[in-house]
Image (tube, rainbow over the protein chains, first blue to last red):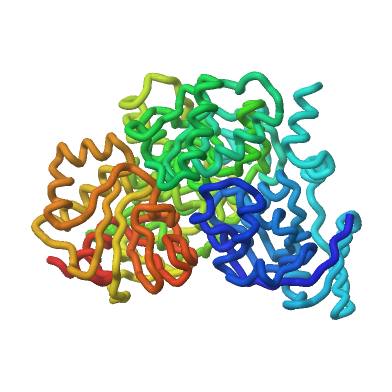
Length: 164
Length: 419
Protein backbone atom coordinates (compact mmCIF):
# COMPACT_ATOMS: atom_id res chain seq x y z
CA UNK A 1 0.00 0.00 0.00
CA UNK A 2 1.24 3.46 -0.89
CA UNK A 3 0.21 7.05 -0.21
CA UNK A 4 1.19 10.06 -2.26
CA UNK A 5 0.23 13.65 -1.63
CA UNK A 6 0.91 17.18 -0.55
CA UNK A 7 1.77 17.92 3.05
CA UNK A 8 -0.21 20.05 5.49
CA UNK A 9 2.02 20.79 8.43
CA UNK A 10 0.82 21.28 12.00
CA UNK A 11 2.61 21.93 15.30
CA UNK A 12 2.88 20.11 18.63
CA UNK A 13 0.01 18.87 20.83
CA UNK A 14 -2.68 19.10 18.15
CA UNK A 15 -5.66 17.96 20.22
CA UNK A 16 -8.92 16.26 19.39
CA UNK A 17 -10.86 19.50 19.96
CA UNK A 18 -8.88 21.05 17.11
CA UNK A 19 -9.24 17.97 14.92
CA UNK A 20 -13.00 17.80 15.40
CA UNK A 21 -14.58 20.36 17.77
CA UNK A 22 -17.13 18.99 20.24
CA UNK A 23 -19.80 21.29 18.81
CA UNK A 24 -20.02 18.84 15.88
CA UNK A 25 -20.15 15.68 17.99
CA UNK A 26 -23.92 15.46 18.05
CA UNK A 27 -23.50 13.20 15.03
CA UNK A 28 -21.30 10.25 14.19
CA UNK A 29 -21.77 10.50 10.41
CA UNK A 30 -18.25 10.33 8.89
CA UNK A 31 -18.98 12.67 5.96
CA UNK A 32 -20.52 15.29 8.20
CA UNK A 33 -17.55 15.06 10.57
CA UNK A 34 -15.13 15.35 7.64
CA UNK A 35 -16.55 18.76 6.71
CA UNK A 36 -15.14 20.12 9.97
CA UNK A 37 -11.84 18.24 10.00
CA UNK A 38 -9.01 20.28 11.61
CA UNK A 39 -11.35 23.29 11.75
CA UNK A 40 -10.06 24.81 14.99
CA UNK A 41 -6.42 24.32 13.99
CA UNK A 42 -6.93 25.76 10.48
CA UNK A 43 -10.46 26.99 9.62
CA UNK A 44 -9.76 26.72 5.86
CA UNK A 45 -8.21 23.25 5.97
CA UNK A 46 -11.06 21.47 4.21
CA UNK A 47 -11.16 24.16 1.48
CA UNK A 48 -7.49 23.62 0.74
CA UNK A 49 -6.84 19.92 1.29
CA UNK A 50 -7.21 17.46 -1.59
CA UNK A 51 -7.95 13.73 -1.41
CA UNK A 52 -4.73 11.84 -0.72
CA UNK A 53 -3.02 14.75 1.05
CA UNK A 54 -0.96 14.03 4.14
CA UNK A 55 -0.92 15.62 7.60
CA UNK A 56 2.50 16.02 9.22
CA UNK A 57 2.64 17.18 12.83
CA UNK A 58 4.89 17.52 15.88
CA UNK A 59 4.72 15.66 19.15
CA UNK A 60 1.62 14.29 20.93
CA UNK A 61 -0.76 14.46 17.94
CA UNK A 62 -4.36 13.69 18.89
CA UNK A 63 -4.08 14.42 22.59
CA UNK A 64 -7.23 15.00 24.63
CA UNK A 65 -10.52 13.25 24.23
CA UNK A 66 -11.11 9.58 23.38
CA UNK A 67 -13.48 10.59 20.58
CA UNK A 68 -13.02 8.23 17.66
CA UNK A 69 -14.67 11.00 15.65
CA UNK A 70 -11.16 12.52 15.35
CA UNK A 71 -9.51 9.76 13.27
CA UNK A 72 -12.87 9.13 11.58
CA UNK A 73 -13.02 12.79 10.46
CA UNK A 74 -9.45 12.64 9.11
CA UNK A 75 -10.09 9.36 7.29
CA UNK A 76 -13.40 10.57 5.85
CA UNK A 77 -11.67 13.79 4.74
CA UNK A 78 -9.58 11.43 2.55
CA UNK A 79 -6.29 12.30 4.22
CA UNK A 80 -4.12 9.35 3.26
CA UNK A 81 -1.79 9.34 6.26
CA UNK A 82 -0.81 11.23 9.41
CA UNK A 83 2.90 11.42 10.22
CA UNK A 84 3.88 12.77 13.64
CA UNK A 85 6.83 12.88 16.02
CA UNK A 86 4.59 11.09 18.51
CA UNK A 87 0.90 10.30 18.99
CA UNK A 88 -1.33 10.49 22.05
CA UNK A 89 -2.18 6.95 23.05
CA UNK A 90 -5.96 6.84 22.61
CA UNK A 91 -5.70 8.50 19.20
CA UNK A 92 -3.02 5.99 18.19
CA UNK A 93 -5.17 3.08 19.29
CA UNK A 94 -8.29 4.47 17.62
CA UNK A 95 -6.46 5.03 14.34
CA UNK A 96 -5.21 1.45 14.24
CA UNK A 97 -8.67 0.19 15.17
CA UNK A 98 -10.46 2.06 12.37
CA UNK A 99 -7.73 1.74 9.74
CA UNK A 100 -6.43 5.32 9.47
CA UNK A 101 -2.78 5.00 8.42
CA UNK A 102 -0.50 6.74 10.91
CA UNK A 103 3.27 6.82 11.09
CA UNK A 104 5.55 7.76 13.95
CA UNK A 105 8.80 9.27 12.71
CA UNK A 106 10.58 12.06 14.50
CA UNK A 107 12.99 12.57 11.64
CA UNK A 108 10.31 12.81 8.95
CA UNK A 109 8.00 14.95 11.07
CA UNK A 110 10.78 17.44 11.77
CA UNK A 111 12.25 17.62 8.27
CA UNK A 112 9.14 17.64 6.08
CA UNK A 113 7.78 21.12 5.42
CA UNK A 114 4.43 22.61 4.53
CA UNK A 115 3.62 21.94 0.88
CA UNK A 116 6.24 19.22 0.33
CA UNK A 117 5.17 16.39 -1.94
CA UNK A 118 5.78 13.01 -0.31
CA UNK A 119 5.28 9.35 -1.03
CA UNK A 120 4.88 6.67 1.63
CA UNK A 121 5.41 2.95 1.15
CA UNK A 122 3.61 1.34 4.09
CA UNK A 123 5.12 -2.08 3.47
CA UNK A 124 8.74 -0.97 3.60
CA UNK A 125 8.14 1.98 5.96
CA UNK A 126 10.03 4.31 3.64
CA UNK A 127 8.86 7.91 3.36
CA UNK A 128 10.13 9.73 0.25
CA UNK A 129 10.22 13.51 0.19
CA UNK A 130 9.95 14.18 -3.55
CA UNK A 131 10.25 17.96 -3.12
CA UNK A 132 13.47 17.73 -1.11
CA UNK A 133 14.73 14.50 -2.68
CA UNK A 134 15.20 12.85 0.71
CA UNK A 135 14.19 9.60 2.41
CA UNK A 136 13.14 8.79 5.98
CA UNK A 137 12.41 5.51 7.74
CA UNK A 138 9.28 5.02 9.83
CA UNK A 139 9.09 3.15 13.10
CA UNK A 140 7.30 -0.13 12.24
CA UNK A 141 4.10 -1.15 14.03
CA UNK A 142 4.46 -3.95 16.58
CA UNK A 143 3.40 -7.32 15.05
CA UNK A 144 0.21 -7.40 17.15
CA UNK A 145 -0.97 -4.16 15.54
CA UNK A 146 0.18 -5.23 12.09
CA UNK A 147 -2.21 -8.14 12.56
CA UNK A 148 -5.12 -5.78 13.36
CA UNK A 149 -4.25 -3.62 10.34
CA UNK A 150 -3.87 -6.63 8.05
CA UNK A 151 -7.27 -7.98 9.13
CA UNK A 152 -8.89 -4.62 8.31
CA UNK A 153 -9.30 -3.14 11.79
CA UNK A 154 -10.15 -4.39 15.26
CA UNK A 155 -13.76 -5.34 14.61
CA UNK A 156 -12.81 -7.51 11.64
CA UNK A 157 -10.27 -9.27 13.86
CA UNK A 158 -12.85 -9.77 16.64
CA UNK A 159 -15.35 -11.08 14.09
CA UNK A 160 -12.82 -13.61 12.81
CA UNK A 161 -12.01 -14.73 16.35
CA UNK A 162 -15.65 -15.06 17.40
CA UNK A 163 -16.26 -17.34 14.42
CA UNK A 164 -13.54 -19.75 15.57
CA UNK B 1 12.09 -7.50 40.76
CA UNK B 2 8.71 -6.51 42.18
CA UNK B 3 5.66 -5.18 40.40
CA UNK B 4 3.70 -1.94 40.55
CA UNK B 5 0.03 -1.85 41.46
CA UNK B 6 -0.87 -1.32 37.78
CA UNK B 7 1.24 -4.30 36.67
CA UNK B 8 -0.34 -6.51 39.34
CA UNK B 9 -3.89 -5.64 38.33
CA UNK B 10 -3.09 -6.18 34.65
CA UNK B 11 -1.35 -9.50 35.37
CA UNK B 12 -4.35 -10.71 37.37
CA UNK B 13 -6.72 -9.82 34.54
CA UNK B 14 -4.49 -11.42 31.91
CA UNK B 15 -4.29 -14.64 33.94
CA UNK B 16 -0.53 -14.29 34.39
CA UNK B 17 1.86 -14.47 37.32
CA UNK B 18 3.55 -11.28 36.23
CA UNK B 19 3.68 -8.81 33.35
CA UNK B 20 6.51 -6.58 32.16
CA UNK B 21 6.29 -3.01 30.88
CA UNK B 22 6.02 -3.05 27.09
CA UNK B 23 4.41 -6.50 27.03
CA UNK B 24 1.22 -6.82 24.96
CA UNK B 25 -1.50 -8.61 26.87
CA UNK B 26 -5.13 -9.52 26.49
CA UNK B 27 -6.98 -8.72 29.69
CA UNK B 28 -10.46 -9.35 31.02
CA UNK B 29 -12.36 -6.19 31.82
CA UNK B 30 -14.66 -5.74 34.81
CA UNK B 31 -16.50 -2.70 33.49
CA UNK B 32 -16.98 -1.14 30.05
CA UNK B 33 -18.23 2.43 29.88
CA UNK B 34 -19.59 4.66 27.13
CA UNK B 35 -21.39 8.00 26.91
CA UNK B 36 -23.79 9.70 24.50
CA UNK B 37 -20.94 10.82 22.21
CA UNK B 38 -18.87 7.64 22.06
CA UNK B 39 -21.40 4.84 22.60
CA UNK B 40 -23.46 5.39 19.41
CA UNK B 41 -20.42 4.49 17.27
CA UNK B 42 -19.64 1.52 19.54
CA UNK B 43 -23.23 0.32 19.33
CA UNK B 44 -23.17 0.45 15.54
CA UNK B 45 -19.90 -1.52 15.49
CA UNK B 46 -21.34 -4.01 17.99
CA UNK B 47 -24.49 -4.54 15.94
CA UNK B 48 -22.37 -5.07 12.80
CA UNK B 49 -20.64 -7.98 14.55
CA UNK B 50 -23.89 -9.91 14.57
CA UNK B 51 -23.55 -11.40 18.06
CA UNK B 52 -26.73 -12.03 20.00
CA UNK B 53 -25.73 -10.72 23.42
CA UNK B 54 -23.25 -8.60 25.32
CA UNK B 55 -20.55 -10.35 27.37
CA UNK B 56 -22.22 -9.35 30.65
CA UNK B 57 -25.23 -7.05 30.95
CA UNK B 58 -24.18 -5.97 34.47
CA UNK B 59 -20.68 -4.91 33.45
CA UNK B 60 -21.55 -2.28 30.86
CA UNK B 61 -22.41 1.30 31.81
CA UNK B 62 -24.13 3.60 29.34
CA UNK B 63 -24.13 7.14 30.66
CA UNK B 64 -25.68 9.87 28.50
CA UNK B 65 -24.14 12.90 30.21
CA UNK B 66 -22.46 15.05 27.57
CA UNK B 67 -25.27 16.72 25.60
CA UNK B 68 -28.02 15.95 28.11
CA UNK B 69 -30.69 17.03 28.87
CA UNK B 70 -30.66 16.85 25.06
CA UNK B 71 -29.55 20.14 23.60
CA UNK B 72 -30.85 19.57 20.08
CA UNK B 73 -32.49 17.02 17.81
CA UNK B 74 -29.25 15.38 16.76
CA UNK B 75 -28.10 14.77 20.32
CA UNK B 76 -31.56 13.48 21.20
CA UNK B 77 -31.16 10.94 18.39
CA UNK B 78 -27.78 9.88 19.81
CA UNK B 79 -29.18 9.23 23.29
CA UNK B 80 -32.10 7.36 21.73
CA UNK B 81 -29.56 4.90 20.30
CA UNK B 82 -28.24 4.25 23.84
CA UNK B 83 -31.71 3.95 25.34
CA UNK B 84 -32.86 1.42 22.74
CA UNK B 85 -29.65 -0.59 22.96
CA UNK B 86 -29.97 -0.72 26.76
CA UNK B 87 -33.50 -2.06 26.43
CA UNK B 88 -32.62 -4.57 23.74
CA UNK B 89 -29.67 -6.09 25.61
CA UNK B 90 -31.04 -5.54 29.12
CA UNK B 91 -28.11 -3.30 30.12
CA UNK B 92 -28.53 -2.81 33.87
CA UNK B 93 -26.48 0.37 34.20
CA UNK B 94 -28.14 2.79 31.82
CA UNK B 95 -29.12 6.05 33.52
CA UNK B 96 -31.37 8.58 31.87
CA UNK B 97 -32.05 12.23 32.74
CA UNK B 98 -33.24 12.51 36.34
CA UNK B 99 -30.98 9.64 37.36
CA UNK B 100 -27.88 10.36 35.33
CA UNK B 101 -24.88 12.36 36.46
CA UNK B 102 -21.46 13.13 35.02
CA UNK B 103 -20.15 9.60 34.40
CA UNK B 104 -16.95 9.73 36.44
CA UNK B 105 -18.76 11.17 39.44
CA UNK B 106 -21.74 8.85 39.07
CA UNK B 107 -20.09 5.42 38.74
CA UNK B 108 -18.14 5.64 42.03
CA UNK B 109 -21.33 6.76 43.83
CA UNK B 110 -23.11 3.69 42.46
CA UNK B 111 -20.38 1.41 43.79
CA UNK B 112 -19.56 0.29 40.25
CA UNK B 113 -15.90 1.18 40.65
CA UNK B 114 -13.90 -0.84 43.16
CA UNK B 115 -10.26 -1.48 44.04
CA UNK B 116 -8.46 -4.01 41.87
CA UNK B 117 -10.85 -3.72 38.93
CA UNK B 118 -9.75 -3.39 35.32
CA UNK B 119 -11.95 -0.79 33.64
CA UNK B 120 -12.08 0.67 30.15
CA UNK B 121 -14.29 3.51 29.07
CA UNK B 122 -14.89 5.29 25.80
CA UNK B 123 -14.12 8.56 27.51
CA UNK B 124 -10.61 9.80 28.10
CA UNK B 125 -11.30 10.70 31.74
CA UNK B 126 -12.03 7.08 32.61
CA UNK B 127 -8.62 7.29 34.30
CA UNK B 128 -10.51 8.89 37.25
CA UNK B 129 -11.14 5.47 38.83
CA UNK B 130 -7.46 4.99 39.57
CA UNK B 131 -8.34 6.97 42.71
CA UNK B 132 -9.76 3.71 44.09
CA UNK B 133 -6.76 1.53 43.29
CA UNK B 134 -8.30 0.24 40.05
CA UNK B 135 -6.58 0.06 36.66
CA UNK B 136 -8.75 2.27 34.52
CA UNK B 137 -8.14 3.87 31.16
CA UNK B 138 -9.83 5.62 28.26
CA UNK B 139 -10.27 3.95 24.88
CA UNK B 140 -12.24 4.66 21.71
CA UNK B 141 -15.62 3.48 20.51
CA UNK B 142 -14.27 0.49 18.57
CA UNK B 143 -12.43 -0.81 21.63
CA UNK B 144 -15.64 -0.37 23.59
CA UNK B 145 -17.59 -2.33 20.98
CA UNK B 146 -15.10 -5.19 20.97
CA UNK B 147 -15.09 -5.35 24.77
CA UNK B 148 -18.91 -5.32 24.94
CA UNK B 149 -18.82 -8.44 22.79
CA UNK B 150 -15.84 -10.28 24.25
CA UNK B 151 -15.32 -8.91 27.78
CA UNK B 152 -11.67 -8.48 26.90
CA UNK B 153 -9.31 -5.90 25.51
CA UNK B 154 -5.63 -5.59 24.64
CA UNK B 155 -3.12 -3.47 26.48
CA UNK B 156 0.51 -2.65 26.22
CA UNK B 157 1.65 -2.81 29.83
CA UNK B 158 2.72 0.74 30.67
CA UNK B 159 5.92 1.81 32.37
CA UNK B 160 5.26 3.63 35.64
CA UNK B 161 6.34 7.00 36.97
CA UNK B 162 6.07 7.51 40.72
CA UNK B 163 4.98 10.94 41.96
CA UNK B 164 5.81 11.45 45.61
CA UNK B 165 3.99 14.43 47.09
CA UNK B 166 4.92 15.38 50.62
CA UNK B 167 4.34 18.24 53.07
CA UNK B 168 1.40 20.26 54.33
CA UNK B 169 -0.82 22.09 51.87
CA UNK B 170 -1.17 25.84 52.26
CA UNK B 171 -4.66 27.32 52.83
CA UNK B 172 -6.86 27.17 49.69
CA UNK B 173 -4.52 24.69 47.99
CA UNK B 174 -6.29 21.52 46.85
CA UNK B 175 -5.81 18.33 44.85
CA UNK B 176 -6.56 20.36 41.70
CA UNK B 177 -3.63 22.66 42.37
CA UNK B 178 -1.34 19.67 42.94
CA UNK B 179 -2.26 18.02 39.64
CA UNK B 180 -2.09 21.29 37.67
CA UNK B 181 1.32 21.86 39.23
CA UNK B 182 2.49 18.35 38.29
CA UNK B 183 1.23 18.68 34.70
CA UNK B 184 2.90 22.08 34.54
CA UNK B 185 6.18 20.48 35.56
CA UNK B 186 6.13 17.48 33.17
CA UNK B 187 4.04 18.81 30.24
CA UNK B 188 1.03 17.47 28.37
CA UNK B 189 3.03 14.51 27.08
CA UNK B 190 5.19 14.15 30.19
CA UNK B 191 3.67 10.76 31.01
CA UNK B 192 2.76 9.67 27.47
CA UNK B 193 1.72 5.97 27.41
CA UNK B 194 2.79 5.63 31.05
CA UNK B 195 1.15 5.02 34.39
CA UNK B 196 1.22 7.87 36.94
CA UNK B 197 1.33 6.47 40.45
CA UNK B 198 0.65 9.02 43.19
CA UNK B 199 2.01 8.55 46.68
CA UNK B 200 3.39 10.44 49.69
CA UNK B 201 2.00 11.82 52.94
CA UNK B 202 0.12 14.68 51.23
CA UNK B 203 -1.66 12.15 49.02
CA UNK B 204 -2.59 10.00 52.03
CA UNK B 205 -4.27 13.08 53.53
CA UNK B 206 -6.41 13.70 50.44
CA UNK B 207 -10.09 12.74 50.45
CA UNK B 208 -11.42 10.29 47.86
CA UNK B 209 -12.84 13.32 46.01
CA UNK B 210 -9.38 14.88 45.88
CA UNK B 211 -7.83 11.68 44.61
CA UNK B 212 -10.48 11.47 41.89
CA UNK B 213 -9.65 15.04 40.84
CA UNK B 214 -5.98 14.11 40.44
CA UNK B 215 -6.49 10.74 38.73
CA UNK B 216 -9.00 12.43 36.41
CA UNK B 217 -6.29 14.66 34.95
CA UNK B 218 -3.63 11.97 34.41
CA UNK B 219 -4.70 11.91 30.75
CA UNK B 220 -3.80 15.62 30.52
CA UNK B 221 -0.18 14.53 30.93
CA UNK B 222 -0.70 11.87 28.25
CA UNK B 223 -0.82 9.03 30.79
CA UNK B 224 -2.55 5.72 30.26
CA UNK B 225 -3.74 5.70 33.85
CA UNK B 226 -3.32 7.48 37.16
CA UNK B 227 -3.42 5.34 40.27
CA UNK B 228 -3.44 5.54 44.07
CA UNK B 229 -2.78 2.73 46.51
CA UNK B 230 -5.99 1.92 48.39
CA UNK B 231 -6.09 2.76 52.11
CA UNK B 232 -8.58 3.08 54.97
CA UNK B 233 -10.37 5.95 53.22
CA UNK B 234 -10.77 3.88 50.05
CA UNK B 235 -12.22 0.92 51.91
CA UNK B 236 -14.55 3.14 53.92
CA UNK B 237 -15.85 4.79 50.74
CA UNK B 238 -16.36 1.47 48.96
CA UNK B 239 -18.13 -0.16 51.92
CA UNK B 240 -20.50 2.79 52.14
CA UNK B 241 -21.43 2.26 48.48
CA UNK B 242 -21.54 -1.46 47.80
CA UNK B 243 -21.34 -4.89 49.32
CA UNK B 244 -19.65 -6.30 46.22
CA UNK B 245 -16.16 -7.78 46.59
CA UNK B 246 -12.93 -6.00 45.75
CA UNK B 247 -9.21 -6.73 45.80
CA UNK B 248 -6.55 -4.48 47.26
CA UNK B 249 -3.27 -4.35 45.34
CA UNK B 250 -0.12 -2.52 46.37
CA UNK B 251 3.15 -1.79 44.60
CA UNK B 252 6.12 -3.82 45.84
CA UNK B 253 8.99 -1.98 47.51
CA UNK B 254 11.26 -3.10 44.67
CA UNK B 255 8.78 -2.31 41.88
CA UNK B 256 10.28 -0.73 38.78
CA UNK B 257 9.73 2.96 37.94
CA UNK B 258 11.18 4.72 34.94
CA UNK B 259 11.25 7.87 37.01
CA UNK B 260 10.49 9.07 40.53
CA UNK B 261 9.42 12.70 40.87
CA UNK B 262 9.16 14.46 44.22
CA UNK B 263 7.06 17.50 45.04
CA UNK B 264 7.04 19.61 48.19
CA UNK B 265 3.32 20.33 48.51
CA UNK B 266 3.89 23.17 50.97
CA UNK B 267 5.39 25.17 48.10
CA UNK B 268 2.42 24.69 45.77
CA UNK B 269 0.21 27.75 45.39
CA UNK B 270 -3.35 28.06 44.09
CA UNK B 271 -2.64 27.36 40.43
CA UNK B 272 -4.26 28.28 37.12
CA UNK B 273 -3.56 26.63 33.75
CA UNK B 274 -3.56 29.30 31.06
CA UNK B 275 -4.86 28.74 27.51
CA UNK B 276 -4.50 26.61 25.50
CA UNK B 277 -2.86 23.66 27.26
CA UNK B 278 -3.23 22.24 30.78
CA UNK B 279 0.57 22.43 31.13
CA UNK B 280 0.53 26.26 31.17
CA UNK B 281 0.34 26.34 34.97
CA UNK B 282 0.91 29.63 36.77
CA UNK B 283 0.21 30.92 40.29
CA UNK B 284 -3.32 32.36 40.49
CA UNK B 285 -2.03 35.37 42.38
CA UNK B 286 0.05 36.56 39.45
CA UNK B 287 -2.68 36.22 36.82
CA UNK B 288 -4.93 39.28 37.25
CA UNK B 289 -6.83 38.47 34.04
CA UNK B 290 -10.38 39.90 33.74
CA UNK B 291 -13.01 37.23 33.06
CA UNK B 292 -16.56 36.87 31.68
CA UNK B 293 -17.66 33.48 32.99
CA UNK B 294 -16.89 30.94 35.68
CA UNK B 295 -17.89 27.27 35.60
CA UNK B 296 -17.79 25.12 38.74
CA UNK B 297 -18.58 21.49 38.01
CA UNK B 298 -17.46 18.55 35.78
CA UNK B 299 -15.94 15.12 36.39
CA UNK B 300 -12.88 16.90 37.76
CA UNK B 301 -14.47 19.17 40.36
CA UNK B 302 -18.26 18.79 40.52
CA UNK B 303 -18.48 16.75 43.71
CA UNK B 304 -19.92 17.79 47.07
CA UNK B 305 -16.54 18.66 48.55
CA UNK B 306 -15.95 21.04 45.62
CA UNK B 307 -19.33 22.74 46.07
CA UNK B 308 -18.68 23.14 49.81
CA UNK B 309 -15.41 24.95 49.08
CA UNK B 310 -17.14 27.23 46.56
CA UNK B 311 -20.03 27.94 48.94
CA UNK B 312 -17.73 28.88 51.77
CA UNK B 313 -16.18 31.59 49.60
CA UNK B 314 -19.43 32.73 47.96
CA UNK B 315 -21.43 32.95 51.21
CA UNK B 316 -22.71 36.47 51.79
CA UNK B 317 -21.05 37.76 48.63
CA UNK B 318 -22.24 38.55 45.09
CA UNK B 319 -20.85 37.42 41.77
CA UNK B 320 -19.10 40.33 40.01
CA UNK B 321 -21.48 42.31 37.77
CA UNK B 322 -19.54 41.44 34.61
CA UNK B 323 -19.35 37.69 35.34
CA UNK B 324 -21.74 34.77 34.81
CA UNK B 325 -21.20 32.01 37.37
CA UNK B 326 -22.51 28.55 36.47
CA UNK B 327 -22.55 25.84 39.11
CA UNK B 328 -23.26 22.29 37.97
CA UNK B 329 -23.51 19.57 40.61
CA UNK B 330 -22.05 16.47 38.97
CA UNK B 331 -24.79 14.08 40.06
CA UNK B 332 -28.29 14.08 41.48
CA UNK B 333 -26.87 12.92 44.81
CA UNK B 334 -24.43 15.83 44.90
CA UNK B 335 -27.30 18.18 43.96
CA UNK B 336 -29.49 16.89 46.78
CA UNK B 337 -26.70 17.09 49.34
CA UNK B 338 -25.96 20.64 48.24
CA UNK B 339 -29.63 21.48 48.74
CA UNK B 340 -29.75 19.86 52.18
CA UNK B 341 -26.61 21.64 53.31
CA UNK B 342 -27.94 24.99 52.13
CA UNK B 343 -25.25 25.40 49.47
CA UNK B 344 -27.69 25.95 46.61
CA UNK B 345 -29.25 28.78 48.59
CA UNK B 346 -25.83 30.39 49.01
CA UNK B 347 -25.19 30.07 45.25
CA UNK B 348 -28.52 31.59 44.24
CA UNK B 349 -28.13 34.35 46.82
CA UNK B 350 -24.73 35.09 45.25
CA UNK B 351 -26.49 35.27 41.85
CA UNK B 352 -25.02 32.12 40.36
CA UNK B 353 -26.97 29.90 37.98
CA UNK B 354 -27.32 26.28 39.14
CA UNK B 355 -28.18 23.55 36.64
CA UNK B 356 -28.98 19.85 36.42
CA UNK B 357 -25.99 17.48 36.14
CA UNK B 358 -24.34 17.58 32.70
CA UNK B 359 -20.88 17.75 31.11
CA UNK B 360 -22.39 20.66 29.13
CA UNK B 361 -19.98 23.59 28.99
CA UNK B 362 -16.79 21.63 29.77
CA UNK B 363 -16.53 20.45 26.18
CA UNK B 364 -18.37 23.38 24.61
CA UNK B 365 -21.49 21.26 24.29
CA UNK B 366 -24.17 23.47 25.78
CA UNK B 367 -25.11 25.31 29.00
CA UNK B 368 -22.57 28.11 28.89
CA UNK B 369 -20.86 28.41 25.51
CA UNK B 370 -18.35 31.25 25.18
CA UNK B 371 -18.52 34.03 22.57
CA UNK B 372 -15.52 35.33 20.63
CA UNK B 373 -12.90 36.85 22.89
CA UNK B 374 -14.55 35.73 26.13
CA UNK B 375 -12.57 34.29 29.02
CA UNK B 376 -13.73 31.65 31.47
CA UNK B 377 -12.27 30.25 34.67
CA UNK B 378 -13.36 26.62 34.91
CA UNK B 379 -12.86 23.80 37.39
CA UNK B 380 -12.82 21.44 34.39
CA UNK B 381 -9.83 19.61 32.89
CA UNK B 382 -9.13 21.00 29.41
CA UNK B 383 -8.43 24.45 28.02
CA UNK B 384 -7.73 23.62 24.38
CA UNK B 385 -8.53 26.04 21.54
CA UNK B 386 -12.32 26.36 21.25
CA UNK B 387 -12.89 23.91 24.08
CA UNK B 388 -15.77 25.87 25.58
CA UNK B 389 -17.09 27.63 22.52
CA UNK B 390 -15.69 30.14 20.02
CA UNK B 391 -12.19 29.25 18.75
CA UNK B 392 -11.11 32.69 19.96
CA UNK B 393 -12.40 32.23 23.50
CA UNK B 394 -10.16 31.23 26.41
CA UNK B 395 -10.42 28.77 29.29
CA UNK B 396 -8.36 28.99 32.49
CA UNK B 397 -8.33 25.82 34.59
CA UNK B 398 -8.47 26.20 38.36
CA UNK B 399 -9.73 24.80 41.65
CA UNK B 400 -13.23 25.51 43.02
CA UNK B 401 -11.69 27.97 45.52
CA UNK B 402 -9.92 30.01 42.83
CA UNK B 403 -12.99 29.80 40.57
CA UNK B 404 -15.32 31.10 43.29
CA UNK B 405 -12.95 33.92 44.30
CA UNK B 406 -12.49 34.88 40.65
CA UNK B 407 -16.26 34.99 40.12
CA UNK B 408 -16.58 37.52 42.93
CA UNK B 409 -13.63 39.69 41.94
CA UNK B 410 -14.25 39.57 38.17
CA UNK B 411 -10.69 38.51 37.47
CA UNK B 412 -8.51 35.49 38.20
CA UNK B 413 -7.77 35.77 41.89
CA UNK B 414 -6.21 34.05 44.90
CA UNK B 415 -8.98 33.34 47.43
CA UNK B 416 -7.07 35.04 50.26
CA UNK B 417 -7.68 38.39 48.54
CA UNK B 418 -11.20 38.15 49.94
CA UNK B 419 -10.18 37.80 53.54
